[in-house]
Amino acid sequence: MGTVWKYNADRSRTALVTGLNNPLGVATDRFNHIFVVEEGAGRLLKFNANGGDYTVVATGLQSPRAV
Image 1 (spheres, rainbow, N blue to C red):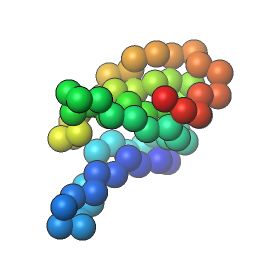
Image 2: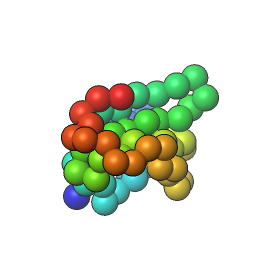
Image 3: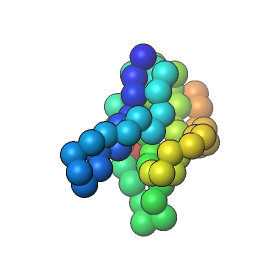
Image 4: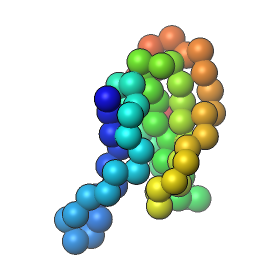
């Protein structure tokens, strides 16, 4: 299962979300959101860079690989 990591200024890392099915493309916006495509599940996910729950933005995508 895939994990999305946040790398901190002190070179440590924090797992933002785990258990994803082949997460690929990653993008951010100016509101501190992270968008990740989950290829194995055909979904686009959105979550806050500070961690916490994610929101499913889109489903039923055919092999998404980029945001």
